[in-house]
Amino acid sequence: MGNPQTSNELATKTPSARMVDTKLEVVVIPVSDVERAKSFYKKLGWREDADFTNGNDWRAVQLTPPGSPCSIMFGKGFTTAKPGSVQGTFLVVDDIKAARAELAEHGVTVSEVFHFEGALRVSGTNGRAAGPDPQGKSYGSWASFSDPDGNTWLLQEVKTRLPGRGLSNLDVATLTQFLREAEERHGEFERTAPKHHWSGWYAAYLVARERGRTEEDAAKDAGRHMANAIQ
Image (tube, rainbow, N blue to C red):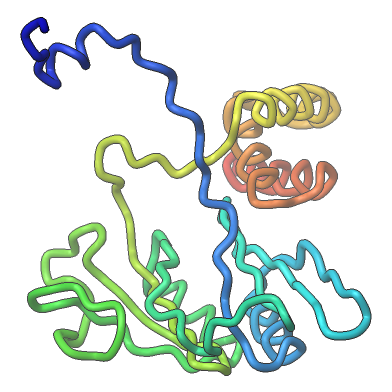
């Protein structure tokens, strides 16, 4: 019998396969009243993607927060998890005060902005200190709210990402499609628009499309963005 190989030697000799993309697509939220939950999340401005039912004892609703590559799903006969048992799901925002104010405008009861003194906790209020992070650090300022069943959400302010933590979940095929759309739509805009650099229009269009806007609405958003930029 030959000498046993170390794990490092095996790792060196074994060809490495490409990592398969495993994208987080849906988070299941257990609720007791589907219509009430749907009304609540749509009130937040979350896009309704689907509402499936067999007409009797099963139903599944999917919605997506603005700008999010991940959706939520809830329903009837869909999960055995206890309603209200999902605690502290993160929603990342770039301006915690603006995000909190927007929720309040929608009639949502949302906490004041806080930061943690010591360990992060996703349930309860232990360790929370009033006000944003004293140093204004990214990832350090929070707010929280609950849905009607008591499932809780944490708003986390991320102004600058840690290295390697990108914002986009676009794949090559989708980005290619969006770029081709942008090229065609920008040509229509450019014929009558004042002198400008194409990059600003493209950027606004791509962001709008990634957030679920239609081609027409994305083009309008890009036009408004450029109108403000050119002033």
